[in-house]
Image (cartoon, rainbow, N blue to C red; front, side, top):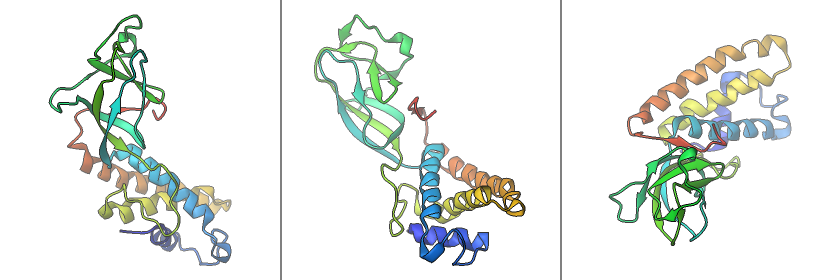
Length: 207
């Protein structure tokens, strides 16, 4: 597993920066670490590389349950027997004046909403894709990204952003080249994980 420091080290080697560069004055890697954390979230969002599950429970008379921790996209929502599934629906399919046992769900804002208002406390198992919930420190590892991809994708995101933010015109002009390289690696990673995705509904807030 690669730490944030190791990922930044590789980005700096590719960027060909000295250790006393403006991006690392007195060992301060604040800028590079901020870029890394931005990339960590983007890669999880674009590749859906981290999958987990959690139980959500409805409240009688309330149509809405908050997304579980770290939620970025849903794969499926199952009844508590684990064999039957709620159907994804459109928001226009929500019957605001009906109550009962939900059979469908839609993602709205930061919540699951259902085709009818739950009339009891129903529990559902949500199989979903997750992203980071806190920024990494230099000694921490982006564990939501599988180890084989950590040093193949994240350094290239940091590298692209370093070129993009550099005020020297001859340096920033190379940003599109490194963006294309990052996106090529990102697409390879996304393809690697795409085979297991039957349906991935994203939070509307994440696009």
